[in-house]
Length: 124
Image 1 (spheres, rainbow, N blue to C red):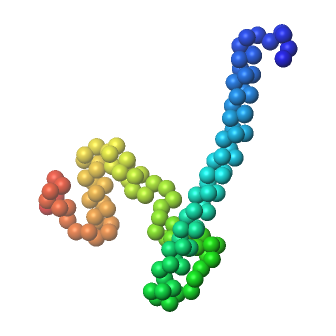
Image 2 (image 1 turned 60 degrees about the vertical axis):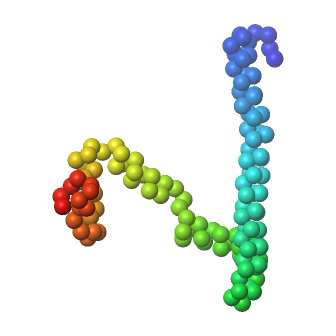
Image 3 (image 1 turned 90 degrees about the horizontal axis):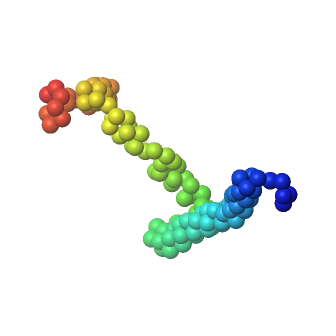
């Protein structure tokens, strides 16, 4: 390192190098953990399928890749890739009570859910 750097510049350079080295070490570990997680998920689904379904329902056995595809299909059909109901809950929490009741009433009208239940303080 050159001698004409100020102490602040040297410290900034050291921090930069530390961050770079940290990511060089951490990024492969993250990828390895993700790959292990995917492998274990697919293998568990394959083992369970091949253990339960062929003897019970005379289904064929499946391979690891079919199990992984089945896991992904179930995630798409039954799982959620994001917020689920949290967004609506946050939106309702940030509303004033009058606005919240008006929102709920519109939902009931739109989906034909009937009048407001008497316990919620709206119209009965």
